[in-house]
Length: 370
Image (cartoon, rainbow, N blue to C red; front, top):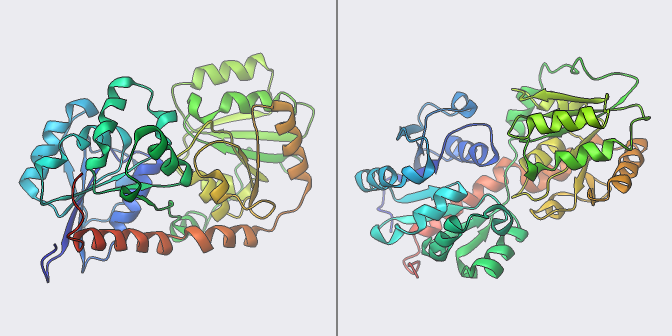
């Protein structure tokens, strides 16, 4: 139990602070926890990433200078032993898996894992799956969606009492600042409809399917803008060339993707699976209607049909293409889209849930390891 009149020390663990969903969430939590109650620190395997620029100065960074996750556990355990935090919050799936094996070495510390994906879809390596046998050692496991919770119970035998659903937050204040002086991107043409997709250029994000969808829209006045970088970059550029998709533009990584979202006519999420897609929330926060693939990862918890978006199966490329045309002919109310997201996923609502969790896990003497 936490001592009176002392701050709760939390160490958040991540590989780095590059521009990903887990990194964004941990940065938001660490920045906004009330300092009269909490003392947040972030342990990074390597001190790099865009979110270092927005992390508050009073959040200590512990840099263990280790490039590979599998080589990091010894150093992570050393820092935990040395610093003796009240809570260790591991925010990245593979780190969570390795760390679960060693939790019982620290009986006075509470360990929380935040899962980042529907695990059975994301973790395919058997040597990593092995560690999920020890996942019940965590005191709490945060899932972002019902899909994620159900998957852990059904496929990894996780104790339901260990699981807690907390959706991802949207930092409206941060996004609004980014949009203050935002102008329409120069590649957005007035006499075209502009569709935006954002994500890592990898198989998981399904951009190959999206390009096939746009092969049915060649004769339409629609531009597809894809923001992001990743291992499938060359493959996707080759697909664009082979399919003769002159109206598809790859923009690479963008420091301010919000201007693309704000001025777009439609946001498309083409993923094969998700955890709880921040970019879908952020599209709504920019007032942009969304069309999302029907995939695991909380999509149906975010989309309110005909209010902030719609769901369709992207594997049927022609049907999805027709759905894009249909959505683009309808009018959508930007303010209502924003309200839909803000009323359920605002930073204030979600951060309160994290604060309540941190306080309750320390004040509940019945929480023990299995």
